Image (cartoon, rainbow, N blue to C red):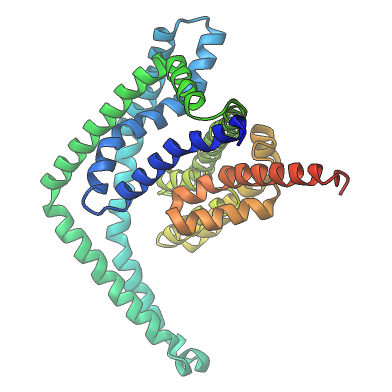
Length: 365
């Protein structure tokens, strides 16, 4: 057998062994928690470094700063945002939720009282026990709120310990990210050496092309969507303040965060925003619905295309498919990452199909 044909199969052996070992580790109930516990800080550091890398590149290019100063500026910007959230936004959001927790039982009692009045005269509602169902829901909702709030107040110490532990983990992630960002070229070169050491050159170059395309889609989509959602959240906050919505900050935060999910996100954010405002006033809930609907149209037709352009590059059907599958497998994070992931998978499949058709001489199909 020719030596050139053997090389790719020999190179696949260590890769297959590594994949099998990882699979065994992940599927081992006793080893998996420890495995992920060890990897978590590095994974968190990589995600932070990946998100901050475009900002650092901009600072290096525009301000002509060295690497250390660029990382320092990027971290100061992040620190400023965190301080703003902790000092201004977080207390207001907590107060909003506390007010909601207090007003929700009263709202449900009022709803039940309303249902026990003239609405019983409607034959359709009485015949199918719709009123009784809503009454039971109101009673159970009040009890659940009381059960949650009561024990929750008594576990402040435990929550404080959990928060301190989470804060420590975040700090470790940011420290690891600093080293990754400072020596990112070294990490890239080292990864390329490993790739070319175990895989033939042709396959290695193909993998690098795919990774570059993945990076281009992910980074542009991520940064663009973050900026787009931040603008939508700020506009929503201003408009809700103008209409006198007492929960303007928490609702605009929900709308901004859920807007990160393409297509479904605005609807996911609109439902709780309208329901929460119903506790205060049906009129304000109506205006909240109008504002969010108007923002959806503005984002879909004007702001989104201006910022994102064609970052994902696939039709709505495929985006919705990616969001649906990602959401079913990994929840909200899967819904957000579903769009760029499906774009990458679709691109790879199209390349394989085009190559096979070209080999068959069927280019013009």
